[in-house]
Length: 161
Length: 180
Image (cartoon, rainbow over all chains, first blue to last red; front, side, top):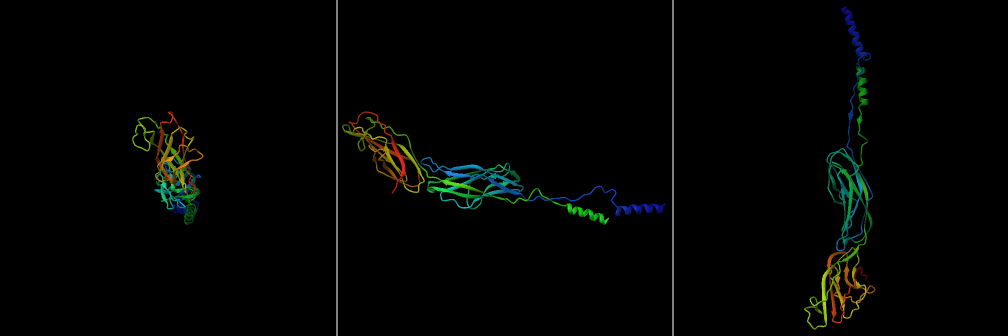
């Protein structure tokens, strides 16, 4: 009897080690989720600014264009948007941009004068996805600027730390 | 045992995956082209014209000073009206003046002088018979200026022969190219 019990135990052990796991209906494995940084910016619109009038005795009236928007997606923290132009403005002519902060995220810096060096236009952006922040451009010139033929500037918006 | 353990580890290695929320975004900048233009701007406006009332209380001696009874000619001056001008022209502009119709009343003469913060003002100019075809310069040398509220001085001269009536000439000021 004793010998029989030993043999049965040995067989059970052999099966456990070498045969199909008769009780192994659960299997586990390790999943890894790796969220990488997502920082995307898209600007739409074709702004057109023409200064064409003045109240007599005053400097020419500013031209405004609010037809553009800025779409943003970021999963980062404390991000900012900067803006710059490719070529300096002519003397006595100023181009400003106002970018609205994404919904519930960040602070707009209001009207910012554009230059070839980047300036903050929105700061303190926390994770957000918003396709509607408005972009408003303002063009101003004094009489000393004279008449300017149609010209263009490329404005570069950058989302960064 | 070893074989089963090896199998499980192999499966784990295979299924250990990088879970990405989406494709890696690299578009951190966006460019936009802005079109700009400044057109020619030449604007002049004047406040409402004055009313010059010839009566004993208002008249002065012709040439200025208190009127002396018995003098034939007398005048009234007015400096209550102004004009404003804005021009971004890179070449000189001037202001001319003319009446819609010449003043024909006997002994009545109208003179005007415009102040200018930045242009060259003419001395008082007689415009009694100056009409649209022959405007006279009252300010010259305006170059990229914005001058507000510049004084217009009128001096009207009359005599006792001037008919007692109301005259309402229209004075036109024009901002135009000065030319050579």
